[in-house]
Every structure is written in C-alpha cells, then in structure tokens.
Image (tube, rainbow, N blue to C red; front, side, top):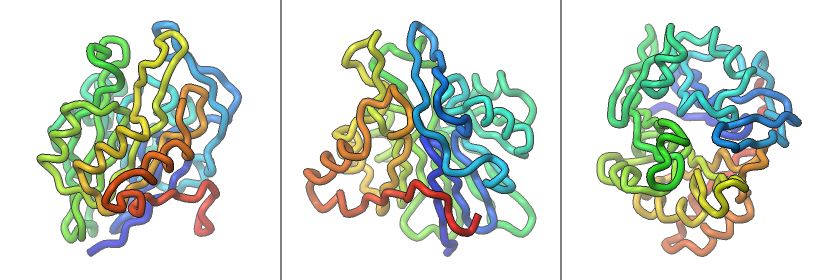
Length: 261
C-alpha cells in the first residue's frame, strides 16, 4: 500500500504524489488579471493565481492534461512547463497538436507510466462531455483519467476532467471502483449561452458520487475564473443535502502552499 498526497495548486491543477511519482494535472500557472478567449464568442477572466509557481512545484514525471485548447486547463505558463516533462497524457487531438512526448488517448484507452524503482501506474482515459448535448464541435474533446497501481486500498484515483453529467460517467460507475475522485466542478457558464453549463454543478456532482461511491471526494476547478458560476458554498450546500452521509467524504484541500515545498 502506498500513501497518496494531493496538493491543490489552483483551478484544475493538482500535484499527485505516490510511490515516488510526481504527477501534475492540467497545468495553469499564469497570474490573475488576464481575460482569455475560448472561441465562439466566449471568454473568461482569471481572478485568482496558483499557490505555487512552476519552479516551486519541483520535478514532474508526467502531466495528465484533460484538454489543451482551453486556457483554464492549460495556460501559457503551463505550456512552458510541459517542455520539461517526460510524459504528457491527453486527448488524441491534443497529442497531435502538442507532438513529442504526448500520448493521445480516447475514452477507455490505456497507457502505462513506468520507471525503474517505482511501481507502474496504469492510466485509463475516461469519458467526458464538456457541455450540453451536441456541444462537441464547440467545446472540443476532453478526457478524464483513472490511475491504478498495485496496492490501492479503496480503488482507482480518478480525475474526472471537465464534464457534465451524461451517460459516459455512468459507464465509469459500472466499470471502475473509485477510491479517490478529483471532481472538476464550477458549473461553467457563459453569457452567450445563458443557463447552459459546461462542467459539473453541485447537484450533478452529488448524483455522480452517489453512483460511483468514492471513499474520498476532492473538489477542484471551482475557483479562480469568472466563468465559474458555482463555488465552494454551492457545492457544500448540495452535498449537505445528499443522503447516506456522502458529504462526510468531501475533502477541501487548503488553498495555501504546502510547508514541505
């Protein structure tokens, strides 16, 4: 059994440390203040910066990149960081654009992270739909990631990626036993598309966790950008009303630099 440490750096960016591996999700390290265009007339302003600068993160063995075409998941500083990372796991389209060390996966494809002296980690891409039905041409392809290694106590570590609730996530519940989930939340909305949302709402997150029954629920991607329509309070409210004590499994990671870095 290997201890797992997760550091929430900001937005969707988290550092996962296990058995000597240092794995970073969706690198976003730009300072706050800038507005970024997402295409089709949509945009968002970054309103909070990361708790660590790239040089404070330390060496990174692999990046799990749910998608590379939105700046709230990969910004300019994040792209610079990629140049020093041995392995990048992302969508097939993203890997074609990034080239080099990028491994492109479709949902349910697998790749293995391997290094001398460490246990191998199998990474399985999981389905995402980054918006309402028929939004793929606008929102583009996205994947989540399920990490599996020998000795896991409760099940895989799952990073949902940016997604709404749809049948692909129900397939995750059927196929995988999930120990820890990093939930991409925020209920992303844009003025142009009204009440349509492009990432999980608090109520959808409860529905998903009732299906998956993870041992530990870690919220990410709920703060720091103007296009998030729900923050911590809305998520807490949704989980407080959830049955079976589901809210007791929430673990809000501190928004300050860890003392060991």
